[in-house]
Amino acid sequence: MTDFPRISTVGLSGIIVSFADEMSEPANRAALAFRAAVNDEGWPEVSETMMSLVSVFLSVDLVTTPPETIEDRVLALLGRQDWQAAPLPPGRTLWHVPTVYGTDLAPQLEEAAEVAGLDPDVAIRQLSSARVRVLTLGFAPGQPYLGELPEVWNIPRQQGLTKSVPSGALVAAIRQLIIFTAPTPTGWRHVGQTAFRNFRPDAPHPFALAPGDELTFPAIERSAYDRLTAMDTTGDGGADKEAIA
Image (cartoon, rainbow, N blue to C red; front, side):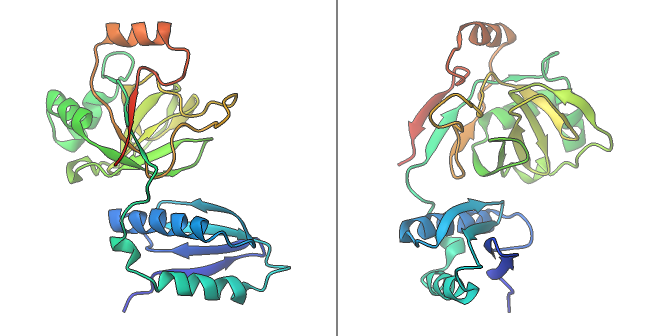
């Protein structure tokens, strides 16, 4: 018998629905699909929804709304289908983000490849051909956690910290990738560099990516990256995008 999905209150600020206690593709799929379903319901008591890797938070004023009112609705919605097998929600986007691997721009590619037990050229081929999903946004404004990579990329974080990686850095650990939205210390290994900026504070929609979007990171040469950074005014960093059917 499973303990999931699990419904818990978060103080008086809302409830959280968890589909697992650790990251998995089915649990993330469930969170994405369930959040979309809650938004479609349009419950007036729910002012906002947010998600982590495997959970959905419903912002509800539990002072004015009894928890049981929302919990009953959530239970009824959960009972409609197997959320871990649910189709992903519509309206998602596939991005192809040009990326430089290695060089002085991404100096930990070879180290990450060694930890994964791969030749650096093989590592680049795998990373540049992988198609990953935005699992959630967090830690810094709009920062996307992307996955999952093949099992060989289940590499640990570093024991120490890299003092700072730049905006657009592509870093790897635990079968996931992150594109950093600002210069930040990290224990993840810096394997690629993009000119993509997900956090665009002056734009009508500050985050270009949303949970459920998908990305690839095709390899480009350093000279092409330099041209992109010199010419790009959008923050897309030369990325192409298309609607996912």
